[in-house]
Each structure stands twice: as structure tokens, then as C-alpha cells.
Length: 254
Image 1: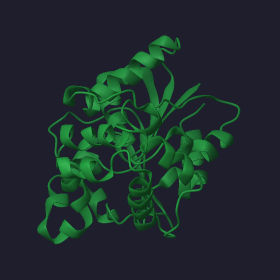
Image 2 (image 1 turned 90 degrees about the horizontal axis):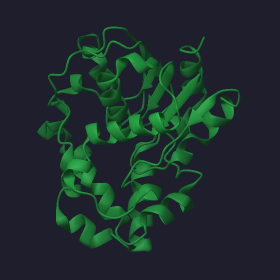
Image 3 (image 1 turned 30 degrees about the vertical axis):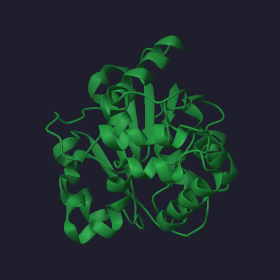
Image 4 (image 1 turned 120 degrees about the horizontal axis):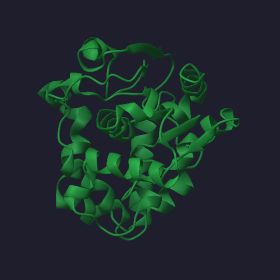
């Protein structure tokens, strides 16, 4: 069986290091997402930064690896939204999915004025001043990304691979390239048909971005979904609770 792991923002494939270690017996593919940190290869156009464009590239990677079906796909943060696009595009290729928020059932709740102090960063990322202030400046990248990691983690700690993340996103042009995601993917609402692939939704109980109450519409967007609340966990599930991710993946393996 093949497991595909898609990282989030601001992150890298190494976000899944502990997960990969727990899946030593399985074939695991952890791609660099184009325009994200280590996947930076120049500023991409908006059309290349959509969740669908990322999903298409993931499917092309699987084609190149000769992997046709029986895949378990895993994604957190933007990786979850990319995985969802792949699941809708080619459901026959997947035997299961392990996701974290977000999903279309969140709708416009994240845009509530009451949550402006939580989702401010998305609006900031869409303005040219974000790249002007931070891109290519190692100190600024470290300060900003450390703040987000510490704010979004349950234990308010920086990631163990912070230096690697900073080095990747501090490359001139890399931070700006990563922000294209926020320009190309606005909001969470969508009218897509429900995902039919069996899915485990891992919902962290201490994620400041997505409260567990927002899981109330999962059945409208997934026809076969199991909700698992991950305790003592913030936004970065593979880093904070790799054990929960490994268990969920194994539940989809034969």
C-alpha cells in the first residue's frame, strides 16, 4: 500500500518525520508542494497555486511513481484541502483518507467579524505588503513563522525543525511564492459533491483556527466519514500528535 502525506503552511515534508517513522513498513511518498518552502522554484501564477492545481500535480507524481490505486492520502492545513481536491478528481485511486480541518462545511464562519483576530493572517497574506516586509529577510521570516507556530500549537512551542523551515521560507522569493496560496484559495465554502472515499477527520481539540463545533457539517461533504477528536493538540497535528495520525492511517490499511 502507498501512503501520500501532504504538508501544510508554513511547513515542509519533514512535518511528517515522526509519522513516516511509524509507517516504516509502508511505501510513503511525501512530496514538496510547489511554491511552499523547499518546493520553491520561482514565483508561480495564481492558476498554479489553486488546490486543484496542487492536487493535479500530486496525481502526476503518483503516475510517475507507477502508483495507480489503493492509496491512502493524508493532509493537514492546506494539505488537507489539496487532498480533498485529489479525492474528488480521482476517487477510484484511493482506499482511504486522513484529513484535518478545513473543509467546505466551515462555510463563511471563518469570515465572521468576531474571528478577525484569528484569521487576520489570511487577509495580510493577500496584500503585497506581506511579502515586502518579510520575503528574503531571514530574521523577519523566523520571527513571523515562529509566532504562528507558537500561537497555533497547543503547547505554544516552536517546531523541532524550525531552523529547516526558516531556511526554506527565507530563500529570496520563497515566502512570497507561498502566499500565492491565499490569493488563489479564498474562503472555505464550496458546492462540490461529497467525497465518497472512506475518510477519517482528525479534529484537534485545541486548534485556535477551527473549533470542534465546526465539524457539524461533515456528513454533508463526506459520504463515509469518521470524526476523531485529537486531545491536547493544536493546529499542527502531524508534529504534535504523530501517534494519532499513524493510527488513523493504519485504520485504512488492509
